[in-house]
Image 1 (cartoon, rainbow over the protein chains, first blue to last red):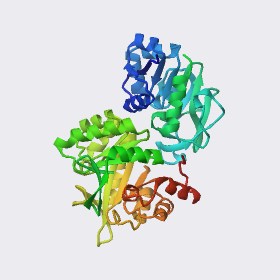
Image 2: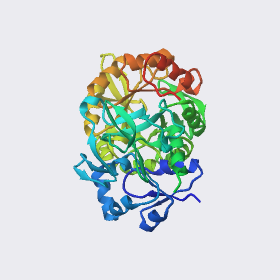
Image 3: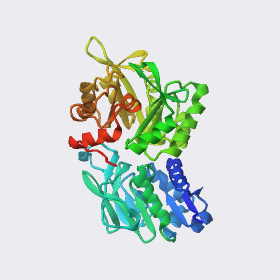
Image 4: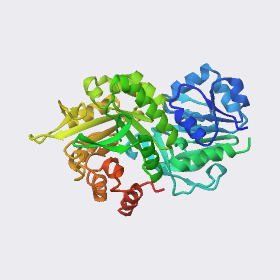
Length: 197
Length: 244
């Protein structure tokens, strides 16, 4: 059985993540219940929105304590990736500190903000990116970015390089939306599902 | 895709509708062919039809794996909430923003600017100025196109879907000058719409119109330009393009 829990909180649209999983034949559970989250085989931590508001909600539910301690594979998406870093410039927000990295706002010089659209990645082989080519493009929508760190496994570039995919131990995260990135995005979700729990 | 009574339709200069098929099927086909984003505009959206639109959004979301925008008949925050929950990535508003500009900021605050697209239908009048039209192009407003674009940007719009009524449905090319002027006037992306007839028109709107994205309907619905061929053509002209 592949039981996947999606973290329920106040950060944006999860219907498309549910749809993407259902296309792969997986029925996720959307929950903020601690027991469910601890016992799920995999956890997806999506998110669109503002960092401090999201952290406030996570704290109210004690999820700020729980999430960094999870042992099963966890996949952060978009704001999810950012929340897994140490600190964001967005309203000066301390975050989950799973990835020791800073989240910063794109400087105006890079062009239009948010960075919205399809971009390629630069990476070395990695289980999450199995079957993905550097020619493939992924869909990004973000005004803030995680700095490159030792946990960066794929780089994006929008005027400056940033972390597009990160991994540390059982924690995985993508800045882009795999659920909105066509077949190649679906492939990444499939790769995540196939990571041994 | 213009949607009327659950079907995709397309008119010329905003009138003379022609049936173009089932929106969910078309959406799936375009997503497979390499469209980067889809846009649905319900042109029959009346209060009693709103549930139909939410249902369509739900079905589209199940089928396709690329971003999509939905518009038509949105009046308040609650309408948007339902569409986003049903799986839309972005919503677009037009007449409602003109009627009550604060709606743009309410939506930006509630859902984030990234999902607030303001559609602006413009027409160049004999005085040489471009004016904003509402109600599917039936009513002229006193807003000049560029001033209106700046205003809604200040209110928190995340993108502008700019349709030139002079060009829409003609297949004679996008309105390049207004597209370029608007893009220079505001720091948010401009999606150019109206007038695509040939692959060269797309090249022009990116190069001369400096558009961030181009939207077309008829040439795709009726098959005169296949999306894969168009993207290949644009890439060969050094216009950055996602390839499948």
